[in-house]
Picture 1 (tube, helix red, strand yellow):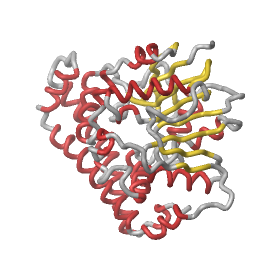
Picture 2 (picture 1 turned 180 degrees about the vertical axis):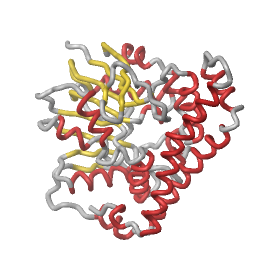
Picture 3 (picture 1 turned 30 degrees about the horizontal axis):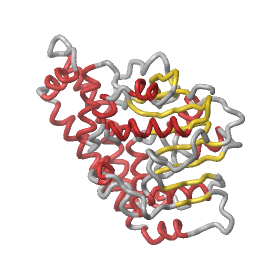
Length: 358
């Protein structure tokens, strides 16, 4: 399939490189300078609220805040122009259906898109991820820059698959909730080669792109349009239920319902694994995470951090629930913590739980 980056003009490449450079310097230069200004104010705050109040009075804060927001908007403008300039060619790719597809694509024109999903341009992406077939291409292209080009080849998702998911040689079905354009689903095929791999998402554009890319790579994946809270799959039919970066984009009740649905799907002995974010315990860093959510049009971070998902797992009948830090650079699951990192980074963590044996 066409990789847009292989076709960028010199001007488009320059724009991409500028946004990428700006994002990197914001994370590894502006943020450390901000933390030094914060440290110079005296005793560190004990709470996120107090740290945030101090943060907003710092001389560098307006630049830190503005640069985060503006580079995200520049990212989508750059990605959008690159994609829409190639609309016909990209649309033709999605329309190509293999004579004998390895996997399947099942769309539901009657699926109900909840208001909390459609009312926000998540990540500031104009029109969101669900509005148009090109929105999936825009998000796929933009996501590479968001992750500072460190997730090319979807390294984060491969690390998650390799380090967070259990060895289950006899697995017969694995489900990825909130699969998007399939970046989190495709590594599951190699991890569980004998299993039926299913990706579930609300957004038809993402599923069409996911299916096309899986077929192009020779991967047998079944993609289905459905709500992760009501997948339509049978009780106790799955060995593993996963999700990556999806819970923080839901209100608290929807998060709870998604965990309950995952528990329903699991066979006895089956594993739940969600790659998400958790607070670090450092009030300043956690304050910047909350503010990132606000500047990035992600209103439900507070819902994730305010939910006791270990208790939700227990209420859903799961056991051994835990959160474990995740280092996206090289280690994957990292029980000893995120380590001493001076740059701004997402506090990745894995929510794990097990369905007890009958």
